[in-house]
Image (cartoon, rainbow, N blue to C red; front, top):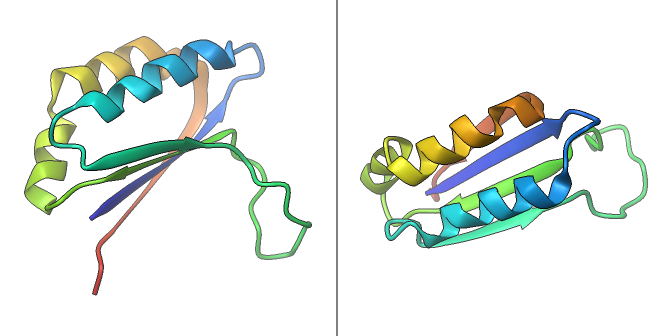
Length: 97
């Protein structure tokens, strides 16, 4: 299952601090894999949202592992340490069919 989180950071945010803290989430043992992404340099299209600052993509081997991640201390540390940096967060969770 994939946990996709899109962040819109405030203008005065230090990107390197956010990136460092977000990458710590990859070290959680139940996270199968993770990546931190920025906007791709693709052409403008009506269906493309180019407003977000970061996209965090985490893979889990099961929904149960995802649910455990939600209460993991490292995840809570990330939220408490970084929530003042963002204006908006949107989550899209999906699984293979």
